[in-house]
Image (cartoon, rainbow, N blue to C red; front, top):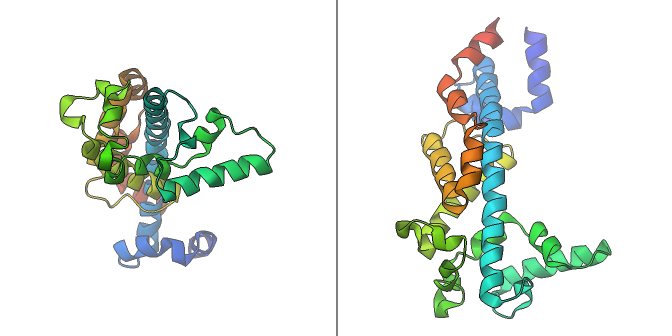
Length: 223
């Protein structure tokens, strides 16, 4: 057991297991149980995070296309410097790959952080984007209490925080509000596309994995 355990810890690295060891008072088996549970939770969250990112990106792109009457809205002069730099970086990468800078390619290359940044208060100043975008589908279908830039920004940035933790392989199992964040992400997806949210309900495994907790995993590791 000790030799196998040492091999697992060496493979993952003590540094990566550090946060788990802190939560387990240095017990390596407990730390590995936490690590394993974190893997399962992250895996279970992936579909919801993936769909939210794609659907939100497309929803905002469609609203921007309608507002500026062109799918190449990113060529406008209204972007702040940080977002303009992100656009320029994508255009440069497409040029290096000898790919035409079509709207579809540019939109797909932009990070989730870029889309979240378009919900900043900077884009409400002088009504650059907000509240104008709220009149366009699918944003116009948001519930009344969520049809504000600040509410959309709060929701997508909470989602982005969770997404970044999961996609960068960081611990989330110990978050006390993890179940609420899962629920909030489901609500956001339902705001944007209720049919996709309904489809996901049939394959979302997060809740049973979360309720299961670590105990079965610890017992399995002790066998």
